[in-house]
Image 1 (tube, helix red, strand yellow):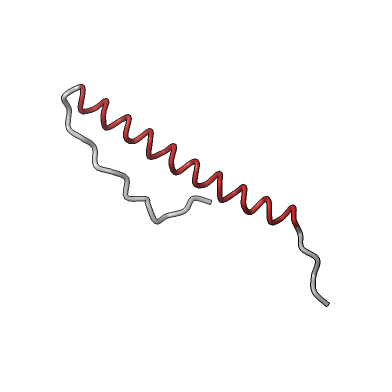
Image 2: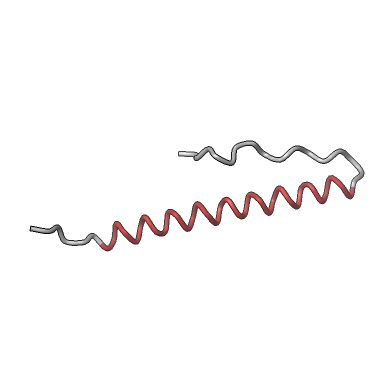
Length: 57
């Protein structure tokens, strides 16, 4: 017998994925703003983050 689908669990997984993607985009935007601000002030441009492949739990 097949299991009944758990729509709440599926929706929660989708929402977690969306939240992760939104957080990543926001982090990238904030880094871009910091780089532009640093360039305007005439300082050195900071190196981009190397945590791209790592997931935070």
